[in-house]
Image 1 (cartoon, one colour):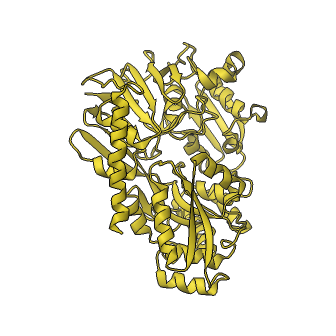
Image 2 (cartoon, one colour):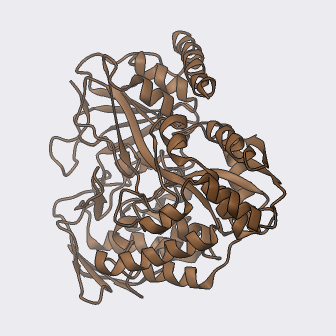
Image 3 (cartoon, one colour):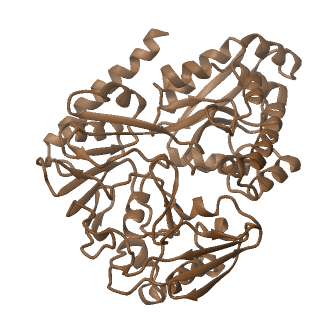
Length: 521
């Protein structure tokens, strides 16, 4: 087993040498930042698909959107709701249907236009109009109406209580000026959104698969922020290359370091690293319940009990995943500990369940996973699962593929099983909704249908208070423990590494880099 874990160190050293050579050759701007520089450079793993906040699908690329566009509230680094363009958190009616926001005075878009409640109404009505085909439209359909009460007050009325309304507002939206869509068109928002936001950064230029350059907004409503004059966001897909950029001071912060890099570099001289639990995110094995052998709940439960999550999370993934056998993080009040225990590692129970299943004489399946590393190396987990299930007479055929291929095949239901790292907001039922509600895009990932579960997930979105929400979350997990439609491995952690001369930076529970208060000493 030790040779399995030592493999990561060899890969780390080899990759670091290759990436260092790339920098010395001048790839992607190898210029290091001087101490006290007003230029801040960071590295993210993937290229933005768009700069339009209502169509952004790329979690890491949201750093660009969220610096240009803002919303009424935001989530701070610790997962707390705080006001942004609103002066305070909204006044919410007792029935949970009406949200009234009072807006900040003297806020302007980067084109000089004053920000008012009309812009809020315009932005949300634009995303709600099905003609505009906004990628994030579905999460806003609970909105019944938006009313401008005065230039600095806007009221939302919902069709039904919607727990995630404020949380989604902080991540999947951005306010833009009245008339801007008609004036500039979709391509302008997609590629060159100059002057369209109220945020601290103004778009300058971008080069696909290379970098995005932003500059400081001198008229930003938070006086004296940001402290950087120029922000360069470099697109560096290879994890060892991101680390080499950090070590050479070509960038000062990197997103999504691999577990082995994070564990190996955190605390080294000149490098700082921290992590935070991404409460709504999951690392899971999605077995297709419509295909053998995952068509048998006893087989699925046996697989769940055969997996040693503690070893996977703490040794294979080197601590960037918190073990959990349900979609709810085991360290939170969301988690039904009894359900978690029933699905956790118990090899004797796994053997007994397998003997009761239709596959008592053994089984075989293909396990897809991303060949590209993001936060963790799914291939290492796949190898470990392969060795564990072999003890039960289950043969696992490893099928590495490009990340986009894995997700496209899973979305179509063309897989037997796949390892998925799902990054999501701090919403306890976000991933379950995506996997088990038939109208959701990942419903075919499991093929599992249970009307009672769908009803409970829907009910959970109408509840906010712990004393009302927790019993519903427990019932959801009871169903998942009984039928084991998915084999949960754990909850992802968001990790970052940065240079020790970086100030004002904190790891964001939501994952996306938060750079407003960040500067170089």
